[in-house]
Structure formats: C-alpha cells, structure tokens
Length: 413
Ligand SMILES: Cc1ncc(COP(=O)(O)O)c(C=O)c1O
Image (cartoon, rainbow, N blue to C red; front, side, top):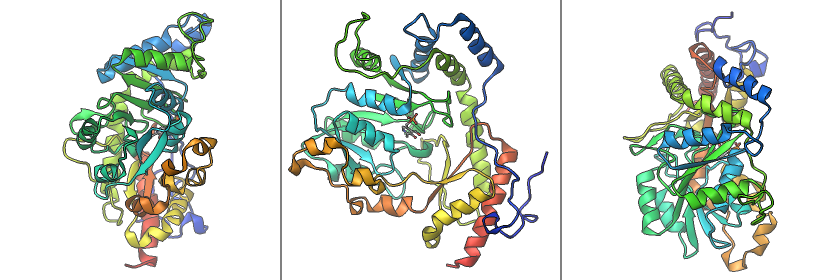
C-alpha cells in the first residue's frame, strides 16, 4: 500500500506540468454493496423474476420502504433521476406553457424534464450568502403564468425551504423539490424531500443511495402517484391492454429494487462517512484560500460533493486549477455550468419553444442571473464518496494544497 504524501514531502512541481502526481492512480468513487445484497441479487437471478410486471416484488418493496424513510405515503420508482423528474412534472397536469421557477445552478435534468413536460423553465438567480435559490429573485420573476417552483439542493447544500415554501403557499404554486444530490440533508429542521407536493431523487452511480442508474419520486397524493406509475409504464392502466394515454417506458428493474432496499439501510452510514470526510478535508484545507459554504442554522449539508469557491482573484484560473488537481489523480470537478451557459437552452433550441407565443418566451440572457454567474465561475466540487475513506482524503487534501500553493504564489492578491 502506498502512503499518503504529507504536504512537506509533496513534490512542488504540479503533475500537470510534468511533476510526480500526488497519487499514483486515481481511486474511483464507486458504491459498495453488502454481501447480503449480492446474495439476494444472485437468488433473484436464480428465480428469474426480473421485472415488477412479470412476477417481481422487489421494486414495490423498495418503494414502500423508501416512502417510509421519508414519512411519505407513496414512492414511484423510475429508471433514472431525469425520468423521475419528467414523471413528477408531467403528472402534476399543469396547463401547457405554465412557468416554473428553477435555480440557475440546477442540474440540467430539471430544465430538460420541464421542457419535456411542456412547461417553461424560468431561471432564478442565487443568493450570494447561501449559494442557493434566491427567494427575492423568485419574487422578481413571478408572473401571472407562474404555477410551480422547483428548488434544487445542489451538492447537498440546501435551499432556504422555509422561505421558499412560504413563497409557494402565498402564490399558490406547486412545490416539487429536486433532491437528486441531497439525500438525507436537512433544511430548516426537516428532511429535504418532505416540503412540497412531491420530491424527485436520483439513484445513479455516485449518489448517496447508488444503484447504478435509477430515480424515485415521493408524495402523499395517491392519484398523482398512480398517474406517475401509469406514465412510467407506457401510459397503461391496471389491465395489460388498457392504453389510457401516451406514456413512457421508465421502469426500474427488480435487480435495482434489491440493491435499493439494501442501500437504503446503509444511507445513514453513507451520510455520516461523507460528513466526516468533508469536515476533515475542510480542516486540512482551511488555509488554502478556498471558501467553503455556510450551512444555515437548523440545516445540514449532505455532501454529494464538498463544494468550495476559489479566491476571487483566481476565478479566471478555476478550470486550470481543477485540471491541475485532477492530474494529481484525485476526484475534483468544476461546478455544473450555469443553466444560462448551456447553448441549447440559451438559444431555445428544442421545438417546444416554437410553440410558445412570442410575448411569453422566457429570457435566458446570462445577465438575468448575475450572482449565479459570479459564484459558479469560482466553484469547484471535491469527491468525498461513495467508497472513499480517510486515507483517500489525505491524498485529496495534499493534492489540492499543492495546486493551491502554486496558484496562490503565482497570482498574488
Ligand atoms: C440534482 C440532480 N437532479 C437530477 C439528476 C438526474 O439524475 P440521473 O442522472 O439519475 O438521470 C441529477 C444527476 O446527477 C442531479 O444531480
């Protein structure tokens, strides 16, 4: 086993410039499954009932246990977080061309799913203190066509849910949370996913509850849950040839149902591990100039990633910094781009936009979200799981320290 390089021993020359990397090879952040889960998958394969629609019971069991974890009445599984969002948005049955408030730092799936559901995403700026959806900008972007609000808790850092819920109630808006990165995070004293009419989650490979690919929606409304189940299964009703409406094929497999139940049992430990590793990382990097997010009182961060901002003067070098950290063979990414920087969205390319009357077309100019532009240009996202441990974090800290030392010295404030 190789030992971590302490900052003193760290070779000064960056790997990206030809120096020795901090870690010989990168360890992928992959989910870990219990032996019991693996055994149950083998038993399932022996039984051969691989679909909930052909004799399988595992997906339904997973849904029941998942809903119970959140204290909600129903859960509807889907084959990805993106399809879960599409089901969640389509099943609300809002009038076509309704406007939906969504933060500028959202993952792209929230906007693509809204457009697929024939709804107009209206992009809301961020609050510079909480780095998340700004209630004030929601007020500014509200119109008589606004019908829904979709807070997205990016990297596990929660939106101000008390304020956003009050705003939604005041303006009679449907609230659906995108919890794709926030399993287990608390916002204002409550679990994210329990605030609105519904919440959608992603279960893909690096998430807190990782089963490869998958998604799930929770709600307390039976009619809505039934509609999502039907839409996910080709728009069918109870009977095999009861084709009620045009639907999709978004079903989760039984193998994933087994993995989901077992990963749910480990969710508490996964959250604890990520919180401990992230705290250690912040301690080790406290004097590097990186700015870590403020966690609001009564809230927790779920650490899908440890997000941080590079110092303002290093903003133009953010991508270079991330490239240099990655060359040291540790896990780090630039933030997801601001939604306004996605060409197909900014240019309103999907044919859906041509169905919107000119006067109701959304405004996707970057200058409509100035705080998001400034903040996201500085953000980096550091891997803290799944499957990573304290030794991995000592490599990560050493690598980031090495790169930040170089950039801090080169571009003095
Ligand atoms: C916040 C958020 N929502 C939705 C999704 C989409 O999930 P999936 O990749 O499972 O389709 C992701 C994926 O990373 C996400 O981060």
